[in-house]
Image (tube, rainbow, N blue to C red; front, side, top):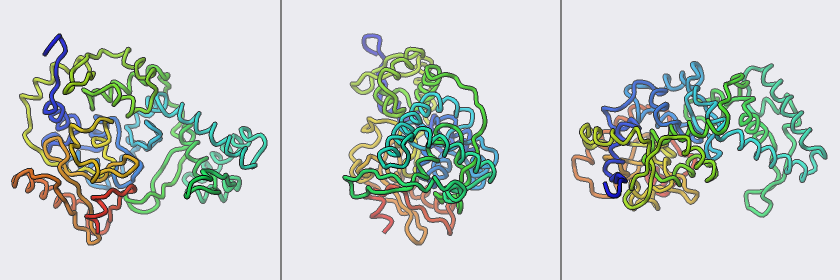
Length: 397
């Protein structure tokens, strides 16, 4: 420690992953909700990744148990949250994410959709028109109980209206407003994503009525709570990491941190922050080092996507593991850092490629994880990440 500021080494940060993210075998949680609660949430954009991320952090938890938590017990909820990204979060955290991030996202989404409706000539008073369509859609959904977007569009034909967007792009042109309206209604808390049509890898989700009134902690308190939970799981970290992960403005992040008891630390030459209560635990973690551990994490895993500054665990492997938009593919880890990637081949085999020499013992441990994962997935399911990356494409064949 120099000048009163503690230095936190890369090794210490990697050790924290073992316990805080339930990645070391001895630290795996007994249930999916228990694992998710300690890392704020799982990325929910890719349906299969939710299950695979839960598998990596739990002991003997099957797909049926994860599905039960999502769609029957509803202890885990899929919602639009940080960075306008779909996350799966504990039910008790929904009001926090809603007030901290989603409410302001919904305001921007509504403003943009109203503008597009007006510019496309759908309605002169586009704001009132959209409100009417939203209310009618919620009523139709309440009558059905659960429904797909196509089913709701049959009940409320105005959902089939079209807007024109991104005319200067190859992917632009006319598009139905169905998904945009449903996504907006979910961001406003009126409806929620339900069980998909198909198996656990399916992305054809149904919709259900919202979960009712939830306690509103207010935006400032919610942002402070979210920052506290993120620092507990992902700290110590740069303030810019927290801002990137939440998608909040710099002023909002500063306001949130001002409500917390945090301390400044040195992160391999850069100023970082961590919860003051966590500082004594760094030495205890060193004493309880679980030893080297293997992990196979899916595309968009919350650990792999937890920080904006990733060099301390990604190393030189960015080009092989990320797509052009910054989405990470399936990764192979050894002792808190990425050492390769994996993919499922057409015959169901989990193929792993190491991108550096980690020794025979480590390679054998990762190979054992691949066999464990292949057995857990089973013979029928096929995993194709929504965002393909160079190494994943090559391995999948």
